Image (cartoon, rainbow, N blue to C red; front, side, top):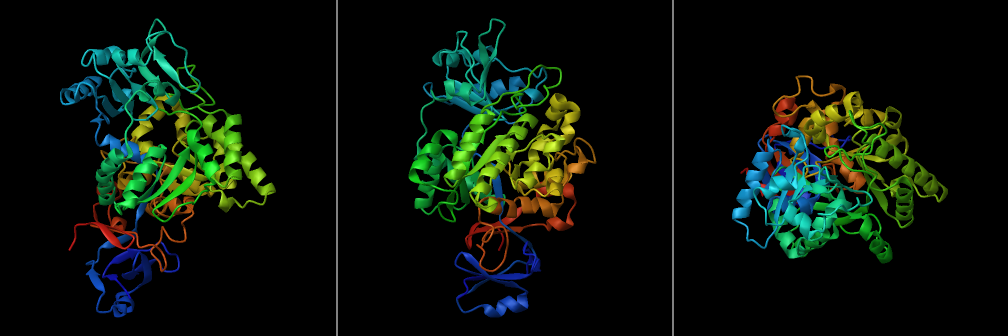
Length: 535
């Protein structure tokens, strides 16, 4: 029996055996036939729903290969500081939120960037003291690797004295050596974040309902998540209530990995809705707060960044994960961090080869691969390491990259270099640290320009542009391979899951600069329209 037939469509299947079609038939959550209208329509029976797509373009559903789902859902409830142009505007928004927030509740915000402010300096506790002197406040920057607090909060966290920096983190300090209000990297940020009242899984699940609808409207049918275990708990509540409409791959952060080992959980454990990815490790920090680990110092500085996890420990962690049947996925942004991670993977690949573990059984990844040494660029492909990259970071961060890395920036956000070397790309957004809209990422990958046209007509380091076809593969087949689901996701073909999107415009016939405005008219996941606005 056939439940649905979509016909009179322009279908981009990504199936090399049948790249184009006009109709497909669906039974349950699977595609059972793809072809022309003349081939597929006769398969209908009296119960089949036939949907005329009026020539509209259909694509496989898109997957964001790197985001923070709990944080994204939480951001929708937070003070929005994303790209506020001045520190004064940020302070105004925080003060306005304080007026409507009960005195015993924290003021939480996300998204500030000192580098787009006039003085380009870190803000201070004193700045916040001027507008909310007696409230608990925690404001995360756009990178997610720094937090801004006031003196009241510093006092509650015991940070007013000349406390030493924690391993893997640091405090921005005043002229007396005391923390001045900005905490860099998780070990420092935890002094405050762990004081915040715990969020419950039901609370987070409620936030996720709004977040999920946003994602579906943009054409996302799945994502790979990097947040803490409570995110998994909330996702399970949605799954139990039959309300989870996105396919999720959940990574496990280092503090919790021993629990997975004790339970015997391996990569791929779960079902087609919610499954385990692998171990998540931080090698370094980020570009914005200048904590990404570099071989040479940042321009006009003696700062080389921060090693959040040293090389020897990373090797121990990755080796242990592999032995327990788990892939490893490592955050590495600076060129020194990427180099060290590649060395770690090279050593572990050698161990796996000795044990006859095929590379396809351990689909290790590097998250971000933001800047590489030229000699390191081919190594991901040589080691069969997935390049999990976020194209929108190139356009969001190019001014920072030029300012802090100078000529070295030509080796950053190098999508084309990785493709030409033969690496597999899995593309994402790093939401909420950047725009979750996959069309913003696809636009950035294809044009290397912001939506306002900057920096120029050619784009920033235009040699790193990739084709629209490659960008779509990066949001479909790349994440599917990374999740060991390439035989049921990323393609519109018989026996594949019926995850697809319907577009208002044909993206293969528009100007590349118009890609960011792509409108999704319908999103189907598992044979069900989770979002639809066409007749």
